[in-house]
Image 1 (cartoon, rainbow, N blue to C red):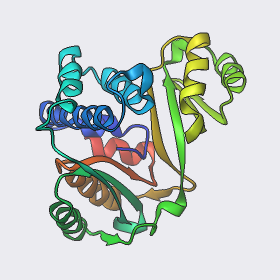
Image 2: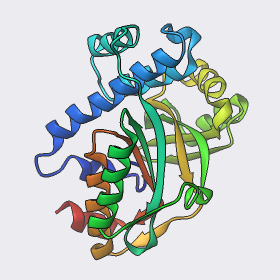
Image 3: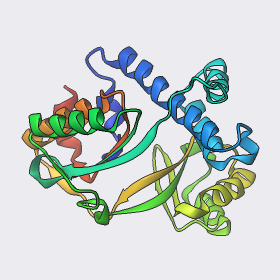
Length: 248
C-alpha cells in the first residue's frame, strides 16, 4: 500500500496483523520466484531479484523462505505468472494503480473489476491514471542514519533527485533506472537502507475527509486481500485528525 505515510498503522489494526503478514510473505515470495525465473537465480547478477530479496528482508521474511522461493524458480513445475497493471478511481476520485501477478488473466481482471465496483470505485483502461504518477526509485533510511543535511548531501553525491526527511526517517527518491546505482552509493555512506524499491509517486494528492477515507480504506484493503495483487498505490492524503479517527 502506498499513500499516506501512516498507512502501516491502519493496515495492522483489528486483528488483521497475522493474516496480513502471511499474505505479505506470500506476495514477496512470489516476486522473488518470478524475478529469479525471468533472470539469473544469482542476485548479484539479477538487479530485480536483488531488489525483491531486499524488500523481503526489510519485511522480516525468514532466510529459508527466501531460499525456497529462489529454488522454486528453477523447478520445472513452477507457475508461469503474467504481470498486469490495472488502473482506476476510488471514492472521491482518488487515482488507484493495482499491480498484479497472475497465472489466470481473466480471473484476476474479473476480481479486480468486481472489487472496484463493490467499494465505490471504477476500473478504467490502462493509462487512465498512471499519467498522474511518476515511476521512481525509493530508498528509505531510519532517522538515526543521519540528520537531514547529512542524508541530503549523501543523496546528492549518489545522484538522487529528492529527499524527504522527518522525525521518523528519510525517504530518498531517484530515477527508476538509477535505483541500483543510487542505492549502492548511499549504502557506502549511510549503511544499509530499510527499504529499496520501485514505486509510483503521485504528482498531486487528494485530501480525504473521514467518510471518504473510510470508503477508500475499504477498497484498498479489499484489493490487497486478493492473492494475485502484489502492490496497490493511490494518490490520497489523510490529515492527522482524520487518521486518529480512523485508527480509533
